[in-house]
Image (cartoon, rainbow, N blue to C red):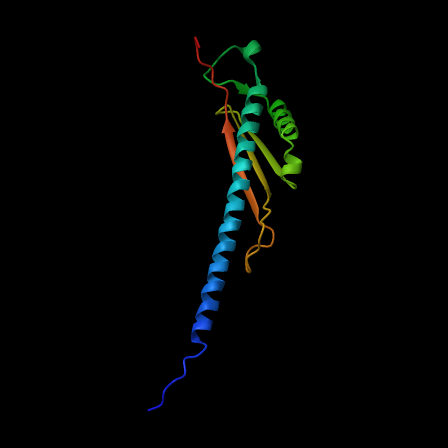
Length: 147
Protein backbone atom coordinates (compact mmCIF):
# COMPACT_ATOMS: atom_id res chain seq x y z
CA UNK A 1 0.00 0.00 0.00
CA UNK A 2 1.34 3.32 -1.05
CA UNK A 3 0.94 6.37 1.23
CA UNK A 4 0.28 9.72 -0.52
CA UNK A 5 2.20 12.76 0.55
CA UNK A 6 -0.27 15.63 1.20
CA UNK A 7 2.33 18.26 1.79
CA UNK A 8 1.51 21.53 -0.04
CA UNK A 9 -2.23 20.90 -0.33
CA UNK A 10 -3.10 23.29 2.48
CA UNK A 11 -1.01 26.04 0.88
CA UNK A 12 -2.95 25.67 -2.35
CA UNK A 13 -6.26 25.93 -0.45
CA UNK A 14 -5.10 29.02 1.44
CA UNK A 15 -4.02 30.73 -1.79
CA UNK A 16 -7.35 29.86 -3.42
CA UNK A 17 -9.42 31.18 -0.51
CA UNK A 18 -7.29 34.32 -0.25
CA UNK A 19 -7.80 35.11 -3.95
CA UNK A 20 -11.57 34.58 -3.61
CA UNK A 21 -11.64 36.82 -0.53
CA UNK A 22 -9.59 39.49 -2.34
CA UNK A 23 -11.97 39.45 -5.34
CA UNK A 24 -14.96 39.75 -2.97
CA UNK A 25 -13.36 42.77 -1.29
CA UNK A 26 -12.71 44.43 -4.67
CA UNK A 27 -16.32 43.83 -5.77
CA UNK A 28 -17.71 45.26 -2.51
CA UNK A 29 -15.49 48.36 -2.75
CA UNK A 30 -16.45 48.98 -6.39
CA UNK A 31 -20.15 48.34 -5.72
CA UNK A 32 -20.06 50.81 -2.82
CA UNK A 33 -18.35 53.45 -4.95
CA UNK A 34 -20.90 52.93 -7.75
CA UNK A 35 -23.79 53.18 -5.28
CA UNK A 36 -22.46 56.42 -3.77
CA UNK A 37 -21.94 57.99 -7.19
CA UNK A 38 -25.44 56.98 -8.27
CA UNK A 39 -26.89 58.46 -5.06
CA UNK A 40 -25.08 61.71 -5.82
CA UNK A 41 -26.51 61.74 -9.35
CA UNK A 42 -29.97 60.95 -7.92
CA UNK A 43 -29.77 63.99 -5.65
CA UNK A 44 -28.53 66.16 -8.51
CA UNK A 45 -31.30 64.97 -10.86
CA UNK A 46 -33.96 65.54 -8.18
CA UNK A 47 -32.79 69.09 -7.55
CA UNK A 48 -32.46 69.90 -11.25
CA UNK A 49 -35.94 68.57 -12.04
CA UNK A 50 -37.54 70.53 -9.20
CA UNK A 51 -35.66 73.71 -10.11
CA UNK A 52 -36.52 73.33 -13.79
CA UNK A 53 -40.20 72.64 -13.10
CA UNK A 54 -40.42 75.61 -10.77
CA UNK A 55 -38.64 78.16 -12.96
CA UNK A 56 -40.03 76.74 -16.21
CA UNK A 57 -43.66 77.15 -15.15
CA UNK A 58 -45.51 79.61 -17.35
CA UNK A 59 -48.88 80.63 -18.60
CA UNK A 60 -50.56 81.24 -15.26
CA UNK A 61 -50.99 84.97 -15.88
CA UNK A 62 -52.00 84.71 -19.53
CA UNK A 63 -54.09 81.55 -19.43
CA UNK A 64 -55.15 81.20 -15.79
CA UNK A 65 -55.27 77.87 -14.02
CA UNK A 66 -56.79 75.28 -16.29
CA UNK A 67 -55.66 72.26 -14.31
CA UNK A 68 -53.81 71.07 -11.24
CA UNK A 69 -50.36 71.41 -12.81
CA UNK A 70 -48.71 74.43 -14.38
CA UNK A 71 -47.64 74.42 -18.02
CA UNK A 72 -43.89 74.17 -18.64
CA UNK A 73 -41.95 76.21 -21.21
CA UNK A 74 -39.28 73.98 -22.69
CA UNK A 75 -36.62 76.67 -23.22
CA UNK A 76 -37.08 78.05 -19.69
CA UNK A 77 -36.91 74.55 -18.20
CA UNK A 78 -33.73 73.73 -20.12
CA UNK A 79 -32.08 77.01 -19.03
CA UNK A 80 -33.10 76.48 -15.40
CA UNK A 81 -31.75 72.91 -15.34
CA UNK A 82 -28.44 73.99 -16.89
CA UNK A 83 -28.21 76.85 -14.38
CA UNK A 84 -28.87 74.50 -11.46
CA UNK A 85 -26.22 72.05 -12.62
CA UNK A 86 -23.70 74.87 -13.09
CA UNK A 87 -24.42 76.20 -9.59
CA UNK A 88 -24.09 72.69 -8.15
CA UNK A 89 -20.71 72.37 -9.91
CA UNK A 90 -21.86 69.13 -11.55
CA UNK A 91 -19.24 69.34 -14.30
CA UNK A 92 -16.30 69.09 -11.91
CA UNK A 93 -17.96 66.62 -9.53
CA UNK A 94 -18.90 64.33 -12.43
CA UNK A 95 -16.51 64.92 -15.36
CA UNK A 96 -18.14 63.93 -18.63
CA UNK A 97 -21.69 64.27 -17.30
CA UNK A 98 -24.42 63.97 -19.93
CA UNK A 99 -27.68 65.86 -19.37
CA UNK A 100 -31.05 65.21 -20.95
CA UNK A 101 -34.14 67.34 -20.28
CA UNK A 102 -37.63 66.43 -21.44
CA UNK A 103 -40.83 68.40 -20.95
CA UNK A 104 -44.05 66.39 -21.10
CA UNK A 105 -46.77 68.77 -22.37
CA UNK A 106 -49.59 66.35 -21.57
CA UNK A 107 -48.53 65.48 -18.02
CA UNK A 108 -47.05 68.95 -17.55
CA UNK A 109 -43.93 67.52 -15.98
CA UNK A 110 -40.17 67.83 -16.35
CA UNK A 111 -37.85 64.82 -16.55
CA UNK A 112 -34.09 65.21 -16.09
CA UNK A 113 -31.78 62.34 -17.03
CA UNK A 114 -28.14 62.40 -15.98
CA UNK A 115 -25.37 59.95 -16.81
CA UNK A 116 -21.69 60.12 -16.03
CA UNK A 117 -18.64 57.90 -16.35
CA UNK A 118 -18.23 55.76 -13.27
CA UNK A 119 -14.98 56.31 -11.42
CA UNK A 120 -14.19 52.99 -9.70
CA UNK A 121 -11.31 52.81 -7.23
CA UNK A 122 -10.37 49.24 -8.23
CA UNK A 123 -10.79 47.23 -11.39
CA UNK A 124 -12.00 43.67 -11.64
CA UNK A 125 -10.60 41.63 -14.50
CA UNK A 126 -13.29 41.22 -17.12
CA UNK A 127 -15.29 44.25 -15.99
CA UNK A 128 -16.32 46.97 -18.49
CA UNK A 129 -13.52 49.35 -19.39
CA UNK A 130 -15.63 52.51 -19.18
CA UNK A 131 -18.75 51.93 -17.06
CA UNK A 132 -21.35 54.67 -16.63
CA UNK A 133 -23.93 55.42 -13.99
CA UNK A 134 -27.22 57.16 -14.61
CA UNK A 135 -30.18 58.67 -12.85
CA UNK A 136 -33.44 60.35 -13.74
CA UNK A 137 -36.03 62.39 -11.90
CA UNK A 138 -39.43 63.81 -12.79
CA UNK A 139 -41.09 66.85 -11.20
CA UNK A 140 -44.15 69.00 -11.74
CA UNK A 141 -45.61 72.12 -10.12
CA UNK A 142 -48.97 71.27 -8.63
CA UNK A 143 -51.34 74.04 -7.61
CA UNK A 144 -53.31 73.46 -4.42
CA UNK A 145 -56.42 75.66 -4.25
CA UNK A 146 -56.74 77.57 -1.00
CA UNK A 147 -53.30 76.40 0.09
